[in-house]
Length: 459
Image (cartoon, rainbow, N blue to C red):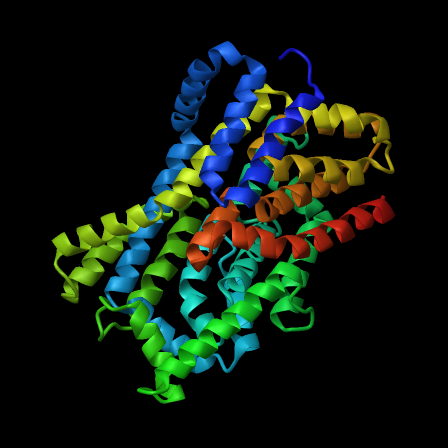
């Protein structure tokens, strides 16, 4: 395809419709990619699909993601099996006094683990889901809190993987002088309106100041009804106080019953510490954590090394659905790039790009692209060389435009049901992916609408 056309909008529409209808994200993404390849060249569809999938699998980012997600699954399996997660569950339930406090604890934990959105999404959900279960919080609500404190928080912190990546992009594209990528990034942080509003929104929801809306309200009512029925059945053999403990132990039937809290906290602290030490490299941080954690557990004789290996393999397997979804999303994104979807959206909106409207239009255009393709980072590597020269030519405020770009990125990461951050937030929270996406979308759209108005007013 030599020129961008409206046909490039068909594959994203196909994916969104099929995902809601079939509730099978991987299948929807693959079918969307096939539709895109048929639009490009029907006769070469099979060859092009084979070439695109191999290209994606050879991508360093995909290799990194498989290693990070799989290894994190392995670490989670060890935390559960050794009883460390069970001990944390007991401690957290003792601290949480009700529904709001359990969600507020989840929110605070999301703020603390600001290094990386993958690390955040997987850690917070896995850590808190049994605590929020006790207070009849739906897994959809938990996943929303986790997702809203993943990318939106990471984008606001200048010592995160987001800052490192986008700071590098700003230097590579001549927006920032060599060595000043992070300082230019920091100048845009006050203007990352969506991220600020998303974090404020989730805090209000967690504290009960903003009610559950639409699909989320239905999920909350369903969770309460299921738990009440469960409570009625369990009361025959347990008091209400005993049931909270029993519910946790039921989740950890194979866990070491004498697990200690330090067996949970030490690996997590090591992971954050090593990630910072290795210049915000989550893979190196995880690798170093596992190197220390295995002998740390072995010295305590919690289980033989051979059993640890088996648990780690099982944990890696548990992450395969999330890994598969992200790989399919990367294949789909590559097809959309070949269809010139980013160029079509920008060309369509370029007549509206004046100095006053540019930040709002950039936010709208990039948010649509990030939502349609599921690519929060890749789409901006493609569009920054187009958008930033345009911003200079019309005399727009550069930090404000960068803030609009990053706001759209965090919106896409949170709102798109097949973005990597959304997939991992659902995985860590034990929530169905499509249910998570549908229930959190109203909140994301409210924050996005307010951000759009904010960019117009500030410009």
